[in-house]
Amino acid sequence: MRLRRNKKTTEGTAENLTDVEHTNEDADSPVDDHNTQTGGAAESAPEAEAITQNVEPAATDEAAAETHAHNVAISNGNAEGDDREEDDDTDDDTDNDDDADDDDDADDELGEITLEELPAQLQQAAQRAGWTKLMPVQARTIPYLRAHRDVMVQSRTGSGKTGAFLLPILERIQTKRDVCQALVLAPTRELAQQVAKETTMLAADSGVRSVALYGGVGYGPQLEGLRKGAHLVIGTPGRILDHLLRRNLRLDDLQVLVFDEADRMLSMGFYPDMRELQRYLPARNLNAYMFSATYPHSVLRLAHEFLDEPAFLNLSRDQVHVSEAEHVFYMTPVMKRDRSLIRLIEVENPDSAFIFCNTKNTVHYVTVVLQRFGYDADELSSDLNQKDRERVL
Image (cartoon, rainbow, N blue to C red; front, side):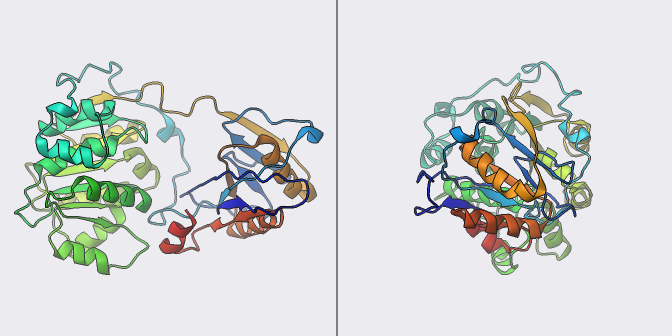
C-alpha cells in the first residue's frame, strides 16, 4: 500500500510529504493477524515487531520526536508476477559467486567499447534514450554480444544491464523475417514491463517489433502481438511456456536467449519451467546471455545447462549487498503496537520505508490505522488484479 500524509493532519503533525513505495512478491505466512514487520526483518515473537531500515539508529527520546509526513508501502508479500511462491531456502541464493572466477578481468579479453564506436543505428537508439556515454556494464558486455559469445554477467539492478543486451539484440534482428528471433526471460511481470518499455524506446523507427508476455492480464493483446510477427519477446517463464504449449509462440528461429535476474527466477521456483522451455529451443545457432546479481551454485548450474563455454564478467564486486544496513528488533506490547509503529515512522523519518505484514487481513488493518493517523494509505496484496497493482505503484 502507498501512503501519503494528508495536508490537514492531526494536531502537532508536520506537513512534509515524503513518498515511499514498495513492491513485494513473496508469499505470506499465516501468523497472528496483528503482527507487522517493517523493512523486511522477520518477526519471531507474538508481541515483537521487527524493523529494518537503512537509516540511522532510532531515537529513544520520545519527547524529541517530531511528527513528519510520509508515504509508506505496505504489503503482505503476495503481489508477485506469476503468483509464484518464493523458495524459503535463502542460503543457496545468498551465497555469492564462490565458484565463479575471482579475477574480474580473467575473461574480459574483448575489452570495452565506447558509444562512439557503435554503429550509427545503435548510436541513434542510445540518443533516443538520452545516453551520453555507455555505462560500465554496457561498455564491457556489448562486445561479447556483438561477437556472438555466450556470457555470464554479474551486475546489480540499476546498473544499465537492460541496455547492455537490448542494443546488440536490436542490431542482430532481421526485421524482414516475421519470426521470434530473441527471447528475454524475466522473473516478474513488473520487470518484463520495464524491459518492454525500454525496448519500445530504443527500437523506435528501427522496424523491430516486440511483445511482453506475462500473467495476470488477458491473452488478447499478447496474441495480437505474436500474430503480427514479434521479433523480440519479453516475458516471465510461466506465461512464455503457456504460449508455447498453446502453439501461439514458436522458437525455431530463435537466435538470442537472455536470462535477466537469473538468481531471482530460481529463488521464485521457475527452474522447472525453464527446463521445460529448453525443449522448444533450437539445437544450433543460439547464443545465451545470463545476468544475475549473485551467482550461487544453482545459478552456475543453470548457466551450465543453457550457455556454451561462457565468459564471466564481474561488474558488481563489493556491491552485491546493500551497504550500511542496520537491523533493529523492537519488543512492544500488542496493545501499543499501532502507536509504536507510528512513533517509529515519525522518529526515523526515512526517505523510504517498507512495512510487511504476515497476512492480508493485517495489511488491511495497518492501512486503516495509518489512514486514521493522517496517512494516505493504499494496500498491496495478491487480492489486487494487475491493473490495480499498477495503480497503487
